[in-house]
Image (cartoon, rainbow, N blue to C red; front, side, top):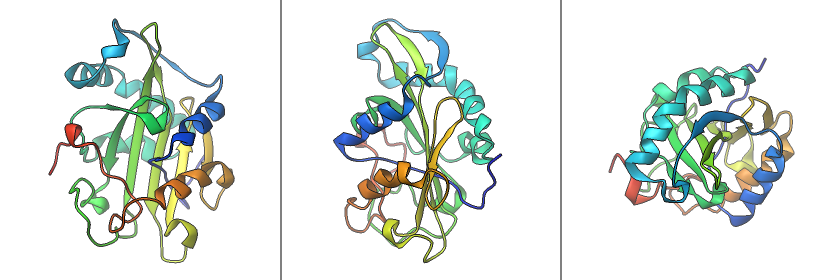
Length: 206
C-alpha cells in the first residue's frame, strides 16, 4: 500500500526516455482486450473513442498500486481533447490531467511557479502493429514543499507500470529509476516551471 507521504510523476522530453521506459516495462504490459483495425492511422476522434473504451480498465490497473490518486485523476481537468501519440513516451498515446491546485496547467503561457500540492497525471496506452491495444504506464508529478528536492525544483516524480507496480518515486523507493524524468523536465523552457506544453493540435484550453 502506498500512502501519500510522497506522490506523483511525469512528462518526459528526450529521445532516450522511450528506450528506458521500454526496458523497465518488459514483459509487464497489460492487454485491454481490445483490437482495432488500421492502427497506424489512429488519431483524432477515433483515438478518443478507443481511450473512452479503455479508460476504466487503465484506472483499475493503476489502482493496484494502492496510490489514491489512481482512483481520482480521471475526474480532474483534462486539457487535451484527445489522446496523442508521444514520441518521447515510446510512441504511446497519452492524456493529461491536473488537480484543482494546478489550475493554471493548460493555460499554455509562461507564468509563476505552480503552488505546492499541484499534481499532474498522464495515463497512456499503446497499439501494436497488429492492432492490439495495450495499457501503458501512468506518470505523475507533484509540486512539494520548498527544499523537498532542489535538483528537480521540488517536483516529485513517480511512474506506475500497467500492472500497478510502482517503478520509482523521487526521494523514495526506486528513486534512481525516475531520475531521468527530472533531468528531462529540467530542460523545459524558462517560465514553465519545469513543465512542457501540450501540442497545439490537441489542446482543449487556450
